[in-house]
Structure formats: structure tokens, C-alpha cells
Amino acid sequence: MGIKTALPAAELGLYFLVLSGSLAYAGRGLLEASQDGAHRKAFRESVRPGWEYIGRKMDVADFEWVMWFTSFRNVIIFALSGHVLFAKLCTMVAPQLRSWMYAVYGALAVMGTMGPWYLLLLLGHCVGLYVASLLGQPWLCLGLGLASLASFKMDPLISWQSGFVTGTFDLQEVLFHGGCGFTVLRCTSFALESCARPDRRYSLADLLKYNFYLPFFFFGPIMTFDRFHTQVSEVEPVRPEGELWRIRAQAGLSVVAIIAVDIFFHFFYILTIPNDLKFANRLPDSALAGLAYSNLVYDWVKAAVLFGVVNTVARLDHLDPPQPPKCITALYVFGETHFDRGINDWLCKYVYDHLGGEHSAVIPELVASVATFAITTLWLGPCDIVYLWSFLNCFGLNFELWVQKLAEHGPLAQVEARLSEQMSRRVRALCGAINFWAIIMYNLVSLNSFEFTELVARRLLLTGFPQTTLAILFVTYCGVQLVKERERTLALEEEQRQDKEKLE
Image (cartoon, rainbow, N blue to C red; front, side, top):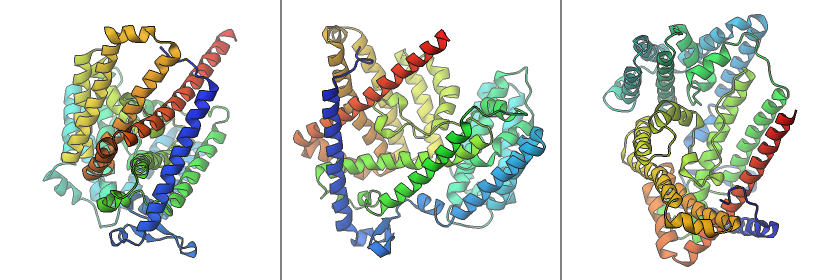
């Protein structure tokens, strides 16, 4: 009930004003805190000179972001531009060979970046999983894939394999783990798809073409083998009408996002402040809540920019890659919470949906979610923080189902049946607001630190109770209602489009 129900325009307008004013107030507190702490001793390592002509320093606590757009910017542009150029030439001259061009160019780029021994290491893992796929046993392929992944996450094998990289540079560890991890997932996908289609024998060349596609190689996103193979095998792919315009728009949005983040970090030190708990504890409650929220929003923006740049190149190659993750602002259910849509699709296809079925039964859902988060823990690298993050998110996902089952039967279902549809939507939005902050707190553990998460929880739930707790809950409720209204509008537009297609 209440899912497709509209609320009065005046009520929605009030929600918008409350949300806008609250975000502006919290932003002002963060801006003042950033200005006050710019010269603190604890900030010296991560707040460096930026726009000196206006006296602004810049938050450089995220070394990956800084490296992408400073020392490695030209390398990334050169490598991706070369890929686009050779792909276009091959498509024009010999389109039937374009998949080979992707593989050869990608393998050469990997060898030039990480060295020939690193390339041979990955080829060894590819051959191992290819041989397993010939046996046609899915359990063996998945088990060997997880064993290969574990070899890159646990000592002493990780230390031995990292020695295959030639030279040392700033992003070496990131590229090593990214290339190895995604290689294992891709090879496992290939092996499982081979088992699912015994009538079609894929070759080792098909696996190498799939794995060494450069735009996806180091940072993803990952496409399952069946989708990639189908799309890349088209000899004369045809672009849908308006596709080039959408590609240019996506590229433009990525550039705008990069510039916006650069501007933002000159005024808001959201990554540095949480590292100084003494200073963070002096923030007003509203600014502290805004700081926690902005940390998750930044992680989404970072993923969206990375996916946007890579997906732009992939779409130029006539591929349909996984889309960027859903914005954290629009998330109020654990079932839709993920920061990498490609890995989420991989896990859902081969583990979560396979074990959980329709995700309506409590026990199968528990088994499926535990298995999924166990593999996710292995992917992220087993450690105490990852164990805690996995447990909390696995609990949140299952708790949603338990509450849903409880609400469908017994007194709660009778109570909701007596409510109007608008009131039902308001009650559900209130539950969504509570869930929203559970998602933030559970993921803040891994994106920042346990100590900062503990500080935020103590201030918002204990020290600030009841004024701060209820105020933030109401502001979040306003945001959830606006998100629900957007979802309702999109659903109605989709229904109208489908009805129009039926009439035509």
C-alpha cells in the first residue's frame, strides 16, 4: 500500500524546503570547520596547497583520486585514447578482428605497465580456470576461482605473487590487486558459463579476449562472460539512434563531476576531518551527520566517475557495460545497496540468486546472503573491519526480509490495512529513514574507520537524544519521501510508455 500514492504538493514542497535548508545548514558547519582546521598540525599530511591565488588548500587524503588526476592522468588518457583509436581503425578495416585487437592491445598495455612476469602470472590463472571449465563441473570451477582469489588476498601466496611485478610506482599495489582480482572473477565467470552451456565449447582465445579488454581490466566494471561474448562477437554492430549523443553527454558529466570534486575538496575537508577524532568531536551535531553522509556520497561519486570514464570507452566499442551504482541519497533498502554494480551482478547471478531463489523464504535467503557476503569478504580482503562490515550488511539485508514477513501477517498487516494509502506511504517512509541511517553507519565502518563510526553513533543516538536524533530522522524522512515521489513518477512514466507501445 502507498507505493504508487501521491502526496499533496504542499506537503512535498515542505519536505523539499526542510531538506534543502538542513543540507545548507550542515554544509555551512562543515565549511567553517574546514576553514578552522586548515592549519592544524594533524591536517598537514592530507591538506596540501591547492588554489594558492585565492588562499585555498585542498584535501588530498584519498591518494587514489589524487594519483588518477595528477601523475597518472596522462598515462590513463594515453592508454585509453590508444585503445579507442586502434578499435576504430580495426572496426573500419577488419571488424571481424576487433575482439582480437582488444585482447592484444590490452595484454601489451598490461605488460608495459606491470611487466612481462605479471602477465605470465595472470595467464597461469587463466589457463588453470580454463582447464577446470573443460571438466564441466560448476562446483569445481567456483571452488578453484575462490581459491585463486584467496591466493591474492592471503599470505604467503600474495607476497610471492606480488614479486612478479616489475619496478615500483605509486599505484602499483592498487593496480596489482585490481588486475588480479578482476581477472579471477572474469575467469570464473567464463568457466561457469562454459559449464552452463555444454553444447557450446568456448576456447582459451575467447577467455583471453574477455579478460584482457583494457578499459575493464584494472578497475572493472565486470561484465559476465555471456554478455561480453555476445556483444563483442557482433561483426557489424549498429548503434541505436541517439547513442553517440548519450555517449558525449556521459563523457561531459564525468568531466563536470571531476571538476566539481576538485572544487569541493578546496572548501570541504571531509576525508581529513574524520582522521582527527578530537577535532571531529567538536563539530555540531548537524555538521557531524553531514560529514558522515558526505563521506558515502563521495565514495559514490568516485565510483560513478570511474564507471563513467570506462563506460564511455566501452560504449564507443559497441558494448553495453554495467551502469554506475545507484546514488547513496536514493538508497533506503539494503537490497539495493551496492557500490559496484558489476560485482553485484556477478554475485547475484552465480551465488545470491542461485541459492536464494525468489528471495521470499527466510532460510534460503539467509543461506544465500551469508554465502554472498563470505565471498565479498574474500574479495575485499579478510580483516576485522571487513568482517564487521559484512556481518552488519548481511544482518541488515536479512532483517529487512524478517520485518517484511512480519508486516505481511498478523497484527501489523491488520493495522496497515486500516490506514489510508497516503498514511501507509508515510509510515513506510519513516521506516525507510531509519534504514537509511543504518546503511550509512554500516558502510561508514569500512569507508572510514570504526572509531569515527562509533563517534557518530554516540553523538547522534546517545548524546544528542532526543533532539538531534529526532531532527535528523525527520530530515531523512523528508528526503526519503522525495525519493519515493521520484520513483513513483518514473514508474508512472514507464507504465504510460508500455501502454503506448501496446496501442501502437
